[in-house]
Image (cartoon, rainbow, N blue to C red):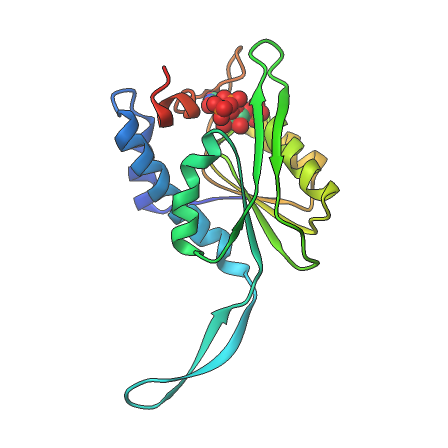
Length: 206
Ligand code: PRP
Ligand code: URA
């Protein structure tokens, strides 16, 4: 299951973040802003409870989020989405999964793991700007499920049909939210047209 966010503000920001002339400062700002739009959608099904609030005029029936939210960035590029989601849900707990894609095999290599304890009802939100072959995301979901996670969603910025199919086949219970489903992977397993190497563009490492 997946959902592509078609909002014009997201599409406008995608046109900027994809641009080869966008430097790392602006790239980081755009990653934060796009993350907020996509996460806003992903959070629409969180659990809320009814509360009554006293306004200066009268009592108002309101709702407050009661979901236990765990945000899990996949290092390193996922860190570029952390500020955006924490602006929306400042009380979320945060776990980190270190994973890089082997440059030859394109297979994910796990190198770090620090997750908060799972609760039976926690909603885990994996964040990573790029879901390409889907290997890193699927491996991250494996790790979370082994740690006891029951509810998992994925938020990315750009993906492609091959990656969606791979993750959805391995984990049909996990919904993926994205700002864009691009055309395809190229021979180097990069998303086309994509935005290049998200980690390098976020952190100015190339
Ligand atoms: C990128 C990206 C994803 C992964 C996507 O990370 O941030 O984690 O590749 O590719 P996949 O869907 O084919 O697994 P990268 O390996 O470049 O590491 P980095 O974030 O440390 O730069
Ligand atoms: N990782 C990236 O950063 N970009 C891609 O297009 C594929 C994997």
